[in-house]
Length: 117
Image 1 (cartoon, rainbow, N blue to C red):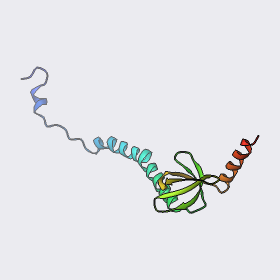
Image 2 (tube, rainbow, N blue to C red):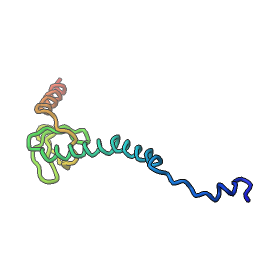
Image 3 (tube, rainbow, N blue to C red):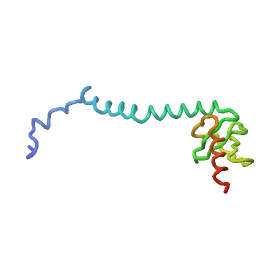
Image 4 (cartoon, one colour):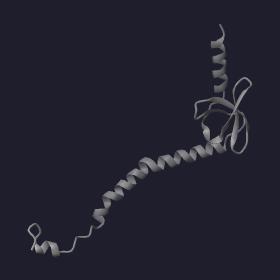
């Protein structure tokens, strides 16, 4: 005979949680799926499609913030012109966005006019 627990309660089998006990954890999993996992996978899919559709001559911004025009490309790397006769090579995955046509020319023209006295 225990002082804190009566013998009748100690001998009773523990109640098994039914579907009611599983609703809250399942609800949390569904919430996290729609809040975090689904949007992340959609962004990854869109970026993969963007990188696959890239061609020579498009204007891009890299993950480092460098704006340039794609001059040459192979399976893994891009050759980007960032100024007149200035080229860099970056990995395809480092491209964040494809800019509208004319952005590169407008920005370089603005830089040239600002640098003249």
